[in-house]
Length: 391
Image 1: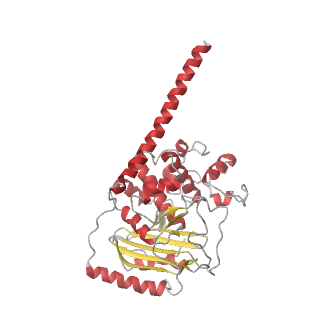
Image 2: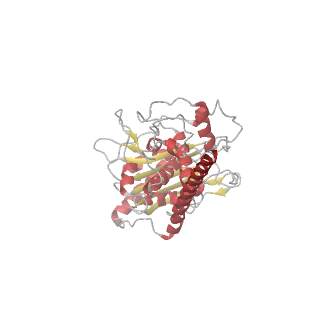
Image 3: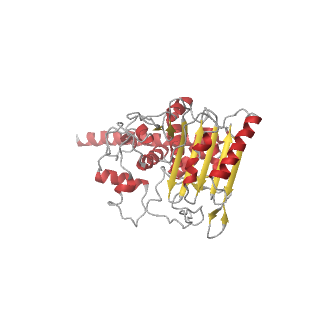
């Protein structure tokens, strides 16, 4: 009887091993297929803008830049494009003030929470390949996750109720020790911090959601998040100056961050967590990402519609959130889609005016709220909501 049990146990173990091996092989094959598709053009063809309209938009953009962005003191990158064609672009200042290293159009900058747009796109691309299911329980991908009823979609639209790691680590983590995404998950498992609210009952912005999404991407692809993002987003869209920061990077060589007095912002224990932040990119590369977001080849229309819709209507208001994108909605106005960001001295705003195929990007590595006010420019291009302050 004992030998019979051992025989069955061995057989079951072998079957499980084969199943796991096949699963890993499928993941590798899917990523290999992604790499082989690098030569496919995922970028759509836009009609050429009307020359008269193009000049008009250009004139308004230049006037706005000179008046609102304070070009004499601006430190960063600024871009406006219509139908995928750049009509105005500038880079100003320094990527490293001490070394007098000039900011160029090819200088990758930390774009803070604008990183969430790219993370969301990666998740949606995996969903289009049936490797991630948006309404699956997070525990299906991360068994250590301690909360019931939280789905991938709820992480994407900030309706999970999961608390922010920047708060709960302050009392549960050695602040002199670097925190990684896997540590965030382990702390959630160990302490089982209470959810801020029952899942899918309201909206609350939490970077933890996107730190967990990065772990799900790693689990599904069997690749590090930086590598997976290269394969899923950056390489297909030819974002040649974009990367996810990891701690193997020479931190002194990348674009530095400064406060409003141009004092260097140092890296701290939270600076290794990615998915919610830590994408370094350029205005030109963000334009590539914006163009890709219109492409059926890159992102199926059914998923694009889910990305660019609001999910939180419990309370009346103008602000909403899709899947990795912010919305401003007002009756009688076109929806204004954007994502802002702020981390240390880095401030950023990515705006995509879907009705008019206009993209506005403002990035600064010296703390400045000016980049968040580009909605004033959007009002010149269409029927968009009135000026609002950063939230």
